Length: 288
Image 1 (cartoon, rainbow, N blue to C red):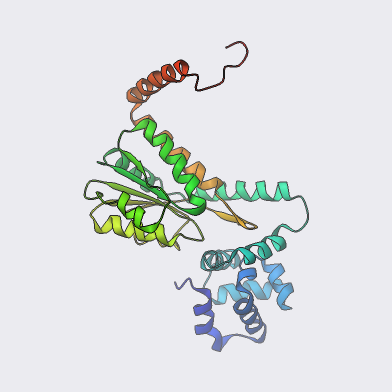
Image 2: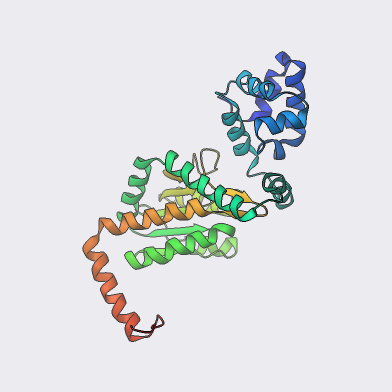
């Protein structure tokens, strides 16, 4: 089914009722806001009943309004500017309990990720990393922190990990110069997707490397590019990206890799504890 709501509405507009044409016009002109409205809220904004909005979704071929709203969100999420994000967030969150609203949103994203994650893809990604000649990790902009976290722990577990630094485009390709067959490229990108991360994955694939995408879903540019995609639900909270679910997915990936090599993991951390102790890496608390 065509997931581009604007194209779908344009194609089906000849058979819309008056109320449905009003909904169509509102979504076309305000898609950045409509994508995050409930059926009742959208109906109120347009001047039609909630049931008219629900029927409109089914007329377009969706199982219901929630599915249509998800499709709208997938379409617009990567298009929203920072200013549009702030406007949408102000409508979503209002002036109520922001702490509760943000934490509740993060918990919803975690639940959705758990329900939709593909266990087979997860296991395949673990195998690819364990069998890789060299592992290259790249995440840019807000995903830089995710890449650094993953790189930090993989460097403790494995001796063939390279964290590609978020520098100029030319220097990124310098760091990927030797990538090739037998290597694995891990690209991390969430809306708004980094064009340089996408191009770097294309470069890695053209050199013969396998690619793992850590991203948000089938609308991601990684969907048809990576050999395996691990999807976690991200969201926007005002002008910033909420990456709680992606971080949790990375935690699971690191733990799974460690569990596959328990003896090596124990030996590594016994040695590290000795180094940390000898060089006062961690502050000693009273009684230690």
